[in-house]
Image 1 (cartoon, rainbow, N blue to C red):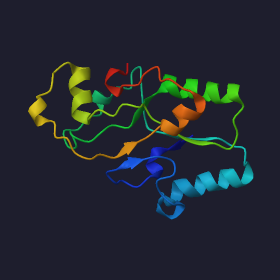
Image 2 (tube, rainbow, N blue to C red):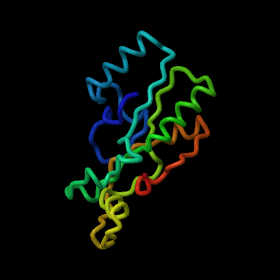
Image 3 (cartoon, rainbow, N blue to C red):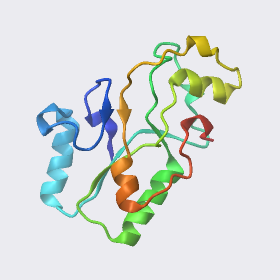
Image 4 (cartoon, one colour):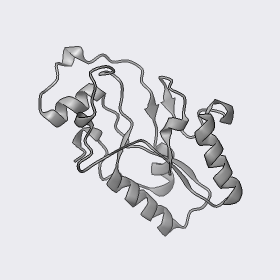
Amino acid sequence: MSSTGIYPQVKKYIDEDTFPAEQLDNTLFAIEKLFLEKIPELNILRLGGLMGQDRMFYKYYKEAGRNEAVNHVHYQDICRVIEKMMLLELNGKIYNVVAPLHPTKGEVYAYQTKTGIDASLVIQEENRTISSDKMIRELGYAFVFPDPKTFA
């Protein structure tokens, strides 16, 4: 397991091939590289923010960044992705594992706390959005929890 924190904090659509190695987080990339040198068939899953069950976004929410998109994943989907990869006997893959929907932090908070959100406060802007499209396509995976607002 690795982290989508390997990618720079830039507001754009990001997949596994968006950045060259020298633009990735030095520490995380060095660890991934070290493991791959020792075990070339190793699969690396770059996880978004881990949520689900008692780990709910509203408990960690800070007002700042209300219009930033979330890049979260439910722990049950992580388990199912691992199971699917084992069944397919995949080796040497690197995948982002992030729910396919990316609501804003404010939207997730409002939904989970049932406080509602004033639509006029939601500013549509470019966001840092991590894509799981490669993993979804190659594994034929359908998320159990595609929308971070509904994680429970």
